Image 1 (cartoon, one colour):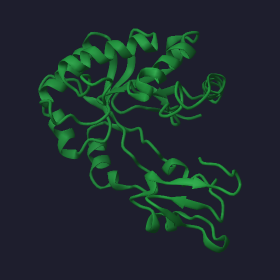
Image 2 (cartoon, rainbow, N blue to C red; image 1 turned 90 degrees about the horizontal axis):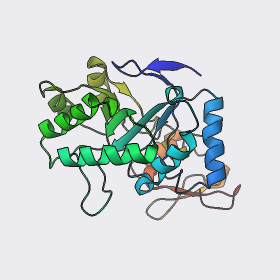
Image 3 (cartoon, rainbow, N blue to C red; image 1 turned 180 degrees about the vertical axis):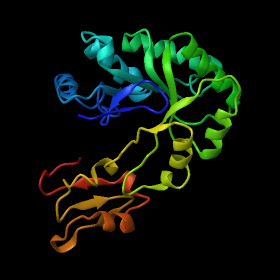
Length: 260
């Protein structure tokens, strides 16, 4: 496993991180989930990424349990805040950030996270309030560094313009060979500001993995055949036939005879 510094931070993270969306605490049985985490450590993965909204706290709770027996300095832990946790709890206001980071720390069974990320931009809260709340979390020792996911260049610039606030060290955009929009402005801007990319869906939710066999039938807002007469599912065909719908695709594979 290779490791890299995360942006302008002193965090040395594995090039491959372990995510937890739709898996731990929700879609993967306990035994298998534990085995997955154990195997990740065996392979040298030290970077674990989650969010409070994953399973409405279930993913964080699972990770808190499975990581409890490991030394805290053996892994880099990241979580996120923004999406609704209840009918009245969402967004990036001062009150929500203060409330949600405490709840995340309790579920994760740690006294701090290494990276606290804004899961999206909150247009209903002044950026000054959000940055001040994130900065307080860092200065209170509850988070070592801060990051964001799916922010526009204008939103990133606005955050850096807030005087006296902590600086972002990471960006988490959707990015793959099939979705390269961040290359246009977000990645260059981040590079200039010492912000690393922690990309989500780098294999386009499996489209680029090579596991989708010839003859596969895709469903995206109705049946779409991408592999007729035994032709392989290729990235170029996915780009022209599915994008931007690919994210809603499901596969019925003759090899598995089941939904993936």
